Image (cartoon, rainbow, N blue to C red; front, side):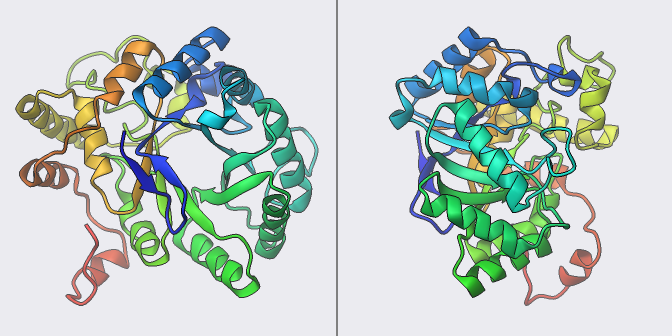
Length: 342
């Protein structure tokens, strides 16, 4: 398994990370992802470690804490063999302060995650979203306290805009506070907005991309085709799950899938393996989070590493998935001294 440095840090992470969104299946939203029980979760962890990748991503809100609990049980007795990343900021409770990145909520969120995971430290702790109501200085000072206490080793963020991330980095530098070394962001062949501003920022500032939903919210599994019903068990059959994720125009999706089919035939790989391998060749990408409902899906996803698409195949996928840039990026793209990084 290949390991890469996580942004401008000394932490090496495997190019694939296992996402625990399929653990538990508690709540209407997460039913669409999967519902691995404790035994199934442990088996998934076993397979990952056997394959040589040891990073596991979770969040306090995944199945209302159950995913973290199950991950904690699955790694019991082998904490020193794994890297754990988890997240907080979203609502976790019924009180007015049970949400956000305030000192009050983050203190409860981090301590709660540590307890559910059954560990005394978290390797990578990420803010799940930007909280515009909490001062950035308050948030970073809180994270600094946990870093100094040894409860968090590295900090990151997730789903930030470019200015959210850049302002946070500037405050970290000004006050010598922990710096976000990772940005967990949505990025896929049918969701390339990350490239417009966040990728150039990450290149410039040394922030590693931790990619979530690399298969476009279940659209690039190789089972979705023109004129065919959705596959049984697909998260796209769950209205709540679909509405809570990225939206993709139907014809655009089929255009990308056609290109993936062609490249898959050339390489002898599956559509998901090709889609994941394309991501692993993009600038700033440190690790790609893969999920799986069962052992077969997990083992198939592992086949995305150990080989590379050719430049011609990458170009074919780039062209099929290209979309018009939003302003001001289309205007900037016309200035030869501001080339895009991809």
